Image (cartoon, rainbow, N blue to C red; front, side):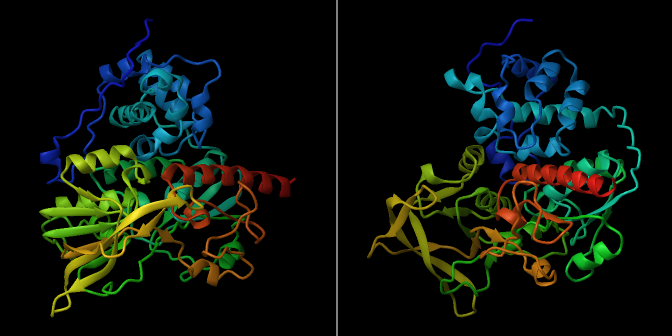
Length: 465
């Protein structure tokens, strides 16, 4: 079979920018079968498979791509599913450009193979064609509790269920998915995709208990007392951060966490939604990560005429995925680089009126490797804003650590673990994902969940001998 030697990826079909910035339908439309085969034929099937080492869950990437190239789409999905519990999610939101695709040999003289787009295609094709369900594992008689139904918790649950464990996932919210449900907008990750992935896990026997706040409804110690032989904490990092500048208490100021939760989980964008949200004319989003892009693009879809992203460094330092930045620019989002807010100004009713900003210059690199922003005295100016959204990162909720004696945490409140396997200072208690690392990516949380599941299995099997 002849390989496709094109130096560029098969383009991803997308909605027109001026249409999509007024709706919440998915932006990327997905490959057709023909497009997928054409892109798969760009893969050289390298002997040493460098792309696999860039995947936190170690998918056999050349193997599933070759199945697509041969037109065996169901087999491609099954290869992916051996390593990943959430392939349709990862194909959409995983930063492949800095992981597997970064190591692709085709990227040396052109664009790498579109690994993420092909993963999405295989997962979507399998779901749409209702192929045979995987067999239910034989129970091994052991029970494990997972705290949090986000990507890390769901991955650990899926891995353990395949080994025969009876797994119960405890989720604080009324829907599973964690950040996949409350944090990532519908236009990037449709919620029916998330629910399909969760349903696939429940068919394996995973039980999901919603509206259960561990640390309040039940404690970690109570879970162990009730017969669970191990607990994996994957409660994420949902506690928002603010700048501490004047005016943050004004009406119209949101954390990105609250803003996106109202939109994504509560569907505040629907006309008949019971969840209120301010639909401003001038929205300003402070931050430069993927969450900032999501918040800005949501504000545009809610009808804001002007949407600005305020970022204290330059374009090259933006931590957001380049694809998300590109989509935001196409949709009319304006970027104010090397700019930082110093105060939020209000009117006599206590509502946001404008944002006072100061220009920044980039100095020497700081501990993160990025150049340190330095204020430029006398460069202050006002930016029109009636909605201000702070997208400055998050930290873990202190509830679990405050109700679990002997659980060591770091100075930021993250749970401390002993190595990649996720064992905490408490016997039989493991942790992984954002609750350990702070706010990071979906796929890194999944990798932590997978590693912890293996460690839990070794611990329980060793104890039962």
